[in-house]
Length: 114
Length: 114
Image 1 (cartoon, chains in turn brown, yellow):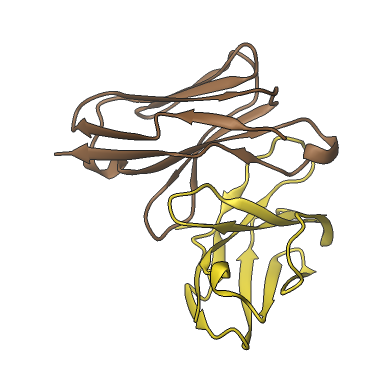
Image 2 (cartoon, chains in turn purple, yellow):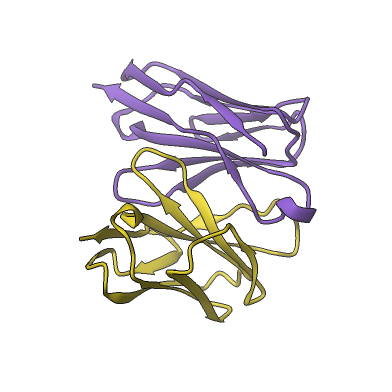
């Protein structure tokens, strides 16, 4: 089945630093999604990407859909303490048996020191 | 605030009990999902409903029984659960019309099996 490799698994950074995380896949995806999950809450959608090469920003967040459609990255600029949480990438393939199914990365645990 | 509402937030039950988890959304989404999530792991898909009909069952044990009474509601009926079923159960919803519509998650029900 499809697998996503998300890295790094965890990051410990100082407030104000920039953060970069990425996901790679052995299969092509038509959609890439980035979610953030805080303790005791469900994943919250940060950015959705629909086209190869697409670069999208949401405030201090920037994400890109790789040209090969097998990878995506998420950058966070000027990190702040509330950026702490687990970040998940997720890919969705084209119709057929993959319809409605997301393949998740293993997550990146982000810790920000004030 | 999430637009997908799950109740209860916490549930403790014995292995012989019968209980139900509830999920409600008013975004007009016609696809709804149940996920199981262990601590610091990505969500694992259990069931997908499309237009109130079960479209995907990821080989989930029969002690979990989903139900979609209408387009806004999704239930998960629980019976004779095992300790390993203790987890966060997440509900999500999305549009159906176009492949690649992102899923929006509720905050989950934290389930503990004694």
